[in-house]
Image (cartoon, rainbow, N blue to C red; front, side):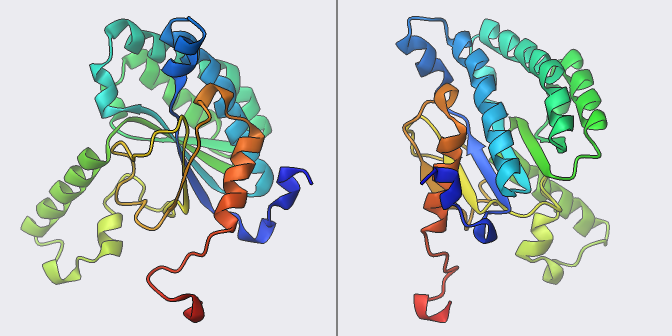
Length: 245
């Protein structure tokens, strides 16, 4: 049976997050500069976005550039930023055709001005998308996000706008950059690495974790569907026993 047909459409995660890992290794295996891996990874972004929309996923968060990625060689960073602009130009038509809304999380104000301009253009042009919201995590780090949320809470407390006894996990979540977006039920990480790399640390508290050895440029729709099928085979208990479910 086709892997897509094995998916129970009544049990699809509302939100899937992906750590897109392995671009550099993909290129190195072929004797190519790392940037070729990033360029070939664009096709996997398209495949994952289309696959998510086809089965009814409502939110797809892609870890595109972390706060730690600034440590990479300048030539690689510059190429990544140019590739982001090029990809937006090439993909905005597909996003609109597939009814996809694009938004971002992370400190995008620290990105180059031409990247900020292009992102704003894409966000505006896709704002009416209803089938899927694709969230690009750009210059994003979970520790920075949690620190900033705590800073906002302390400010509101000092200004008398927040009572300490009213602070709950739900209230705290409202100060995060993902406020109003459901937490991911499934995290996918490619390339065989088994770690979270400072990604959505608060939001992934109850997510199912799926690690695949597939390098990101080789990640296909079927790889996405395989992750969904694996997710559906797991029992999500949230602290309860199987008998309580």
